[in-house]
View 1 (tube, rainbow, N blue to C red):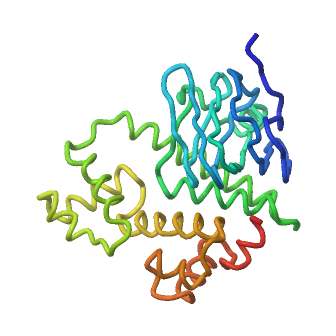
View 2 (tube, rainbow, N blue to C red; view 1 turned 30 degrees about the horizontal axis):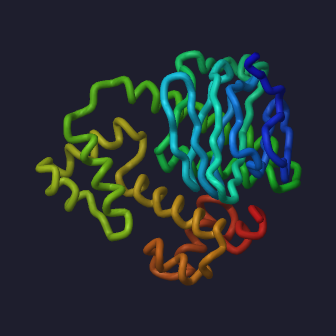
Length: 269
């Protein structure tokens, strides 16, 4: 018999758990090498903080590495395979009564969805950070961030179904191929043979962000992953992710996450 997990229930060891008015957030260590077919009673996001994981549903399989973000709708049956290494993930679970209360439907998102958009990933990470702080404002902050997260995911799903220019796939490849070097819209447009203005407008239409903002969010993603791994000091991380220096990286984190890289390292543990 296929198993359904209750709200807040996950396979593994839960290191930290917070509940906010129908939103359940956990920080979980994966301890099972294999978890058979199951589903959860609520939709939820998985943000892989460390390690690797293979997620399979009835239609496809996802290989997840550190920094991956996956959305499961509540009716989605799936199973997990964990490689032999330490693996840890955060879950953001949304009670369906909370969705009904604020009149949001996720019915158009079927099964699982792997999310590559770095802006959406950073929103999920912000929610995790807020869940680990204890003050009078984090519940309201989490709910507002979650509304923004769900809105962006739904819009991305709509945009995904729209016909994109033939060069759009190559654009995504170029961005990720060049994430270790300085990249500009001028160089990308030259590579694609497209006018920079046309590229900029088309990019914003599909991603709801400027080209520069999107690339900066990728850099933040990479810095977060390095900080969580704790294999490099902050000066080296700033160099590896192409900030001008550690101070520049710190300023960027303060603006985006209201915290410093050093504080983030302590918070995430």
